[in-house]
Every structure is written in structure tokens, then in C-alpha cells.
Length: 355
Ligand code: MRU
Image 1 (cartoon, rainbow, N blue to C red):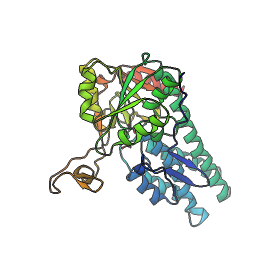
Image 2 (tube, rainbow, N blue to C red):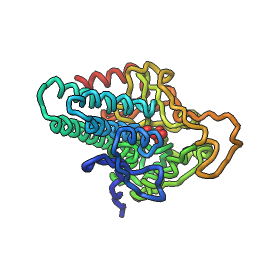
Image 3 (cartoon, helix red, strand yellow):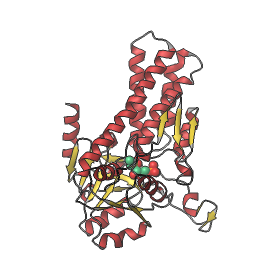
Image 4 (cartoon, rainbow, N blue to C red):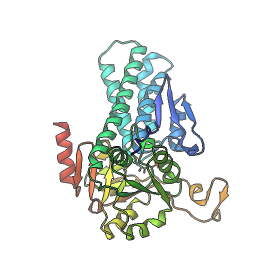
């Protein structure tokens, strides 16, 4: 009999304050860390204690509440909201969800300010309601993505995924992994091939951890084994998440995703991107305008305390790459499956959403 997966983990929660599951310690230790200030949250986002596009959007929304709580005098609350927004927006450049979370809270703040007289307590509690709602909405988006995506997977499919686009990366059950969780819950005996995802091993540390604890069979491979896996004919789909999708359907995601898309195309394996529409940035005409985060050389020169390259060698460490829309079989959003994504289709979807 099929084992029903245990609930997926949560990446963050508000319990009289913001708490993050410290992802740099996984899978060895499950430690929740309290966040007391905006600079502390900025640092947590930068060092990937909380990571994944939707999860950092949710964390930033809560961070805006903390920013207002930090106001020394109540009349400075709006100023503090803007100050927190500026600091949080600058913490990581690629995932547009971070800006979406910040922007949402600024809109709510401005509405409250326009409503005139309220107590400081009422502003902070209404901002907290808005942050909770943003978090809850992300949870619902994940469920819908999962339901749409699961229908695409053949029975017993083997799915290759890269990085971690799971519960740990969102406010809910994940994007790419929500497709897998949903399929599994529907009784489809899917299996997963997880790329370890150099240099910070989100695939090995996080994807393998969360899928294993849900009872979903997962096999770990090094990134360079993806080519032979796809050539073998035993992989039925590649499913990944995204940090930002441009208006023409180009997709930014963890470094190495583009290579996977090229391989999937060559081997005629469907390449699916699962992401909420909060990840679509209509202000970016193409992937070329998506800012790509460049991270520190130390992430490539060694691991932990082990040095793996001469310290003087120049290093490039882009954290993300861009997959051209032409290589994407479909984008799975909360609204459904967008086959062969294009500017026309993404704009039509945005209009339906607003209408
Ligand atoms: O650097 P990270 O770990 O934040 O990168 C995360 C990814 O690339 C994910 O695939 C992406 O954010 C989608 S998460 C649902």
C-alpha cells in the first residue's frame, strides 16, 4: 500500500516573531533561529539560511513588519518600512519574489497611512496580517502548481530536478517538488533523481532531505551525471523551479539549469519549469535583463574547511543562469500549464489574472 507522505517541512514561521529553519545546517541539524532585526534577516538571506525565491519573498514580508517594530518613535513607522524595504530588496538580486514581498508590504503601509489616525499597535498588527496573508497565498499557489503539474507526469515517472524548489524554498509545499508531492499523493509511484547542485549542494542537502522524510524515493547524482542519465532514456521529465521569468518566457534558475535544458532538448525529454506568477517579471523583456547574482569565490575554492583549489586562481561564481524560452516545454503556474511559453502567452495569462 502506498505510504502517504508525512507533511513537508516549513522554511519559516511567525510565532510572536520571525523564525527560520536554518538551512545551512541541514541535513545534519534541524535548528530554528529567531530573527530580531532587519540587518539580521538581510544577513540570513545573504548566507542562505533562508533561500529559494518564494521563501525569501515571504521572509522579506515579515521583515518589513520587524522594520516597523524597530521604529524608535511611532511617527517614523512609514520611514522605517521604506528603510527595511531598501535593505531587504538589496540582499539578493535575482529572485523577483523578494521585491514582490517588499512591494506588497509598502502598498499596505501606504494604504494604512492614507487611512489616517491609527495607533502604532494597529499599524504593526495590520502589517503582520498582510505578511501572514502573503505567506498563506504562497502556500495556496504551491498547491495549485502541484495539482496542475502532477497531471503531466506519466505513471511511475522518473523526474530529474536541480537545486531545491521544494517546501524549503517556498511558503508551502514547493514549486517543482509540489508537482512531485502531488503526483505521489495521487498514487503515482514517481521517483526522483536529484542533482547535488554545486557549489552549495541544495540538491544533496535539501531536496534529498525533504523528499526522503516524505517517503518519496530519491537518488542523488553529481551534476555532471545528468547527461548520461538523460541519454539512458530512463528519465521521463526534468522539473525545476525559477527565480525570475522574463516577459518572453526566458527562465532564470540555479546555475546549471540551462545546461540541463540543453540536454533535455537533445534527448527529447520534456523540460518543465514550475513557478507561481509572482516569479514572472513583466518588466524584464528577456532573460538578458535579469540581474544574475555573483557570489563569493570561497564557495568554489573549497568546501567547509577543505581547500580544493589554489587560493590565487580567479573564480567566477554566478549563482543562476538563464534558460531561453525555446528550451522550455511548459511553465506550470497556479493558473495551469503554459506550453511553449512566449511573451504573448505570458501577457495573456497576466491579463486573465487581473480580469
Ligand atoms: O540560491 P538558492 O538556493 O536560493 O536558489 C534557489 C533556486 O534556484 C530555486 O530553484 C528557485 O529559487 C526556485 S524555488 C521554488
